[in-house]
Amino acid sequence: MLRLRSIPLTALALCILGSPLVRASNFSFTGTFTNDTDLQYFTFTLANATPGVTFRTWSYAGGTNNAGQSILSGGFEPLLNFYQADGTQMNPGISGPCTAPPTGNPVSDLLADATTGACADVYYPTTASFPGGFWSPGTYTVVLSTFANPGIGDLSTGFFAPDVLGLPVPSNFTCQVGAPGYQGNPPTIAVDQPFCDEFSPGIQRNGNWALDILNVDSVTEASTVPEPASLLLGAMGALFLISKRVRLRS
Image (cartoon, rainbow, N blue to C red; front, side):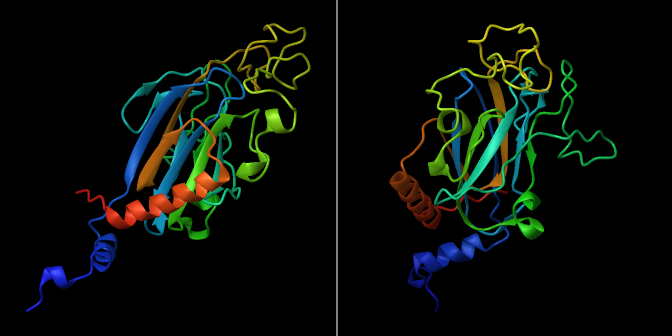
C-alpha cells in the first residue's frame, strides 16, 4: 500500500507544479517619482516555462489597471528595462504605438494622451523577447525609469543620466535648455523642474507611475539597487522559496 509520507517532498512539489491546478498571478503597482533619475525595481519569478507574461503601464494616458483602479493621465513617459537573474540586459519595453479598438487586441491597446496626443505607455508581450511567447523558468528584474533615463547595458552598467551624462542622483535634466524635444523655444518651464514631455515641447508631466505585471508567480518590489552578490543571493532565495511553497489558485 502506497503511503503519502513515502513520497519525497521535492517530488511531490514537482508533481504539484506540473499540474493544471497551478495558476500564475497578476500584480498591480502604483507610485510616484520625485526626480528624472528615480528608478523603481521589481524582481519577478517564474516556476515553469510560461506564456502570456505581460507588462503594461497606465500612467501616461490613464485608464483602468488590472486591479480595477482608475489611473489618471499626466505621468511621465515610462520605460521598462529588463534583466536576467545575473543582470544581463534583455529587450527593453518602450512606448506605443497606439492601436485603436476594435481592430486591435483589447489586451494590448494603448491610448493616446488627451493633452499631447502621444502614445507613451508601455505594453510588453512575451513575443518581444522569447520566440513562441514562452518565458523560461527563473528570476528576472524589471526596472521602471523615465524614457529619458534608460539602462545603457547590463544592470551593473547603469543608467543614462548618471552613467553617461555624469549627473548626480537625484537630478532633474529633462527641462534643461537644449534638451532635445523636451523644452519649447524659448523655454517655458524652469530648468530645475522634472518630467518635461518629450513628445510635446513645453509641456510638463508629473511623477506618477502605474504598472501591471501579469501571469507571473511572484513579484518583489524594491526602490534601491541591489549589489551584484545580492542579486545572485536573491535569485537563489527565490528558487528555494519556489521549491518550498506552491501557490494554488482555483
